[in-house]
Length: 100
Image (tube, rainbow, N blue to C red; front, side):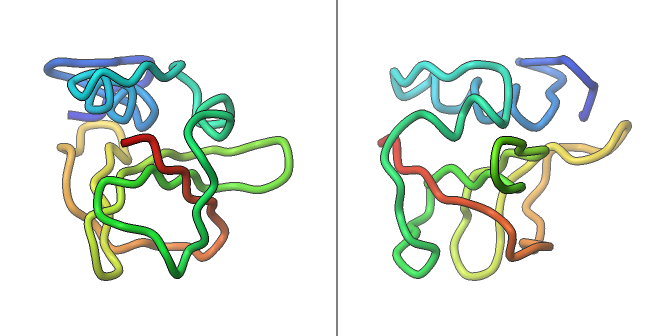
């Protein structure tokens, strides 16, 4: 379930989910979508692969973090009371980072 400020294992906010999942693969991330843009290496949108980190925003502020699921889908924690789910990518304003 989504819960602001939560980082698992039962409740998550968006960057808490990505932080938790990548930790399972030995990758350390901060609990902030903006800060997560500084980790891994940049990948073009056209070259993204399932498992890549997607961060929504631009410039110096990013408001949402997700994990690319393939096609036009991502895994994320999006809204209070909603479960973590596979959802359609809803914006084209994002960057991709590869950590694994």
